[in-house]
Length: 344
Image 1 (cartoon, rainbow, N blue to C red):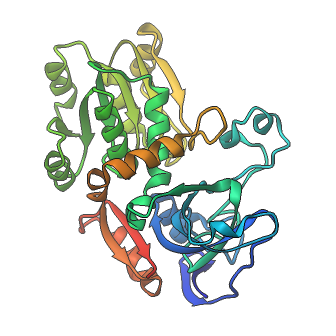
Image 2 (cartoon, helix red, strand yellow):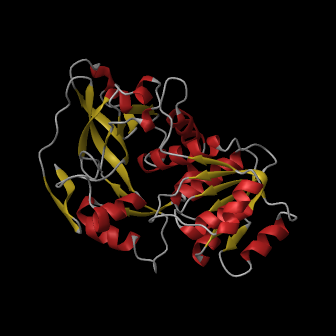
């Protein structure tokens, strides 16, 4: 099969590799769509994966074409998205079904081979099935959409609240969609004029640029009160400080963005955390348990309103275009939201 193999930092190669075979309780998935995550940019250009060679890619879906022992053959032909985390099932977090906090997890696309490929073998447990009415490219948004869904759920966002989202990437926009569905007023803060225009086009009409006077602008549109919940989706010092400053007394801060380095905030902003009794929550991945399955909830929304999510897919590529894809998606002069590899 064809796969995009990361052989070293800045060396992503599309080449022929052996097609995997499903083991006991696994299925072989023909990958139909796989999103390119911003974390993949760092893996390819900066940090690498946990070992070389590795096939990146963790936002994917496809159809089952073969099954291993213990899996019913009737599942062949079924469409599925895949929860990319492989828990150890032995640690305390796993026993409590908090799989995203597993102490010894494996992960498709970073710790083991992922889905920038034509096929992948995955445990049946990791599969969530979806109907033939949902296009593969939209279904492949399930992973980032679940991450955003989880973060919004942690914020206990409800109808009538005001929510500030700092950032304009895929996760940030998806957070906006989920918050809006909760009935909240959504205010975006970003740095890109084209992204601001895009957000306005898809129904978010309160979008502020991070420029001088931002704090005053926030106070003005919230009547000097601040917002109920802020979701930080960038990971920079500036984004963290902006998120804190946006909050009202006893507001809630949800941290989602991967940090771009060690964090440092101004003393007076730290004072606000204390004096305003801000609740701070970290959000990591998504829930995938018998008690709370974010993926199942998200899939139902994707199936019922795919058009609202399809706007996020701005670029589609073949596997052979892997280097071109990464050049385009990391080029700040080119407008993009979500890039995706598509296999026919």
